[in-house]
Length: 310
Image 1: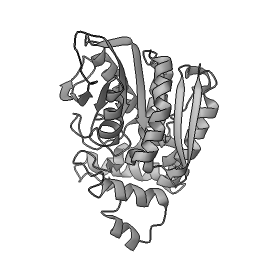
Image 2: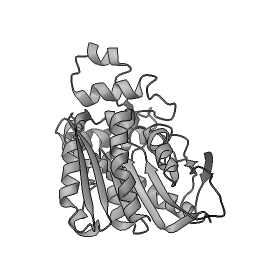
Image 3: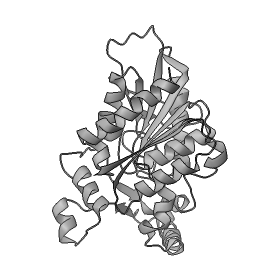
Image 4: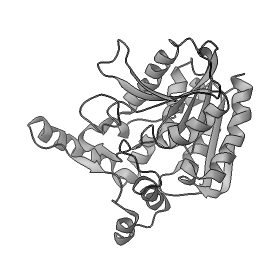
């Protein structure tokens, strides 16, 4: 494992990444690679790297777990922007870097994304054909989520509020940074929150279970407009031609990963091989780091990548 930073001529900033290497790694050999995309509000040290990145490396893949632009240790100002366009472009930037490395086989590159990262993986693969296989772990279509529950089903009202706040900030007022989750599980319960995903997200991100300095779980409110008009699965029926594996848990919550996962599996009509694994006893956040469901996911990932990156 090693950490690195890189940029290319398209960027004014650096992307920070952790590379995970197979056992007995030999830089004179050529390896298949997986680009691992973290969830909304997360970072490379959490599920995309420490869980799936490490396991994939043990299977013989070089894994690139990276921080999105404006987040974690990557560059970009102001901080904590969640930009779907940039998030998808980041995937291509990471591939641009990967293909400069002699030990990466540029014909054997896959993407794996968790939660919002799963939506970004699908979107990126629709136009980035250096990607040869797509793995979406409990994927969330962030645009759909923002138009619905994150805006309280009032996307136009949210856009008006963002517009007003952006004008305030342009005139020198303080940036409005939204905390996406309660400060602790107790705070969530004290606030009367009952949704499974909110409670389990708080348990993951706000305790020692998953807490990481880079996983800020916050968002700059004024710069979130484009999320509301974005669709992770746009044109998937015609443009998503690569093999696709979706893994979802059937214990559903308000973030809608089961709904989105089954949706993209059904819509990937142009895919050469579409598979779905639905786990009856597990939830969205169980698939972040709990050994049993993660190993069930890996049991599907192993033959899927073997079939398409061999």
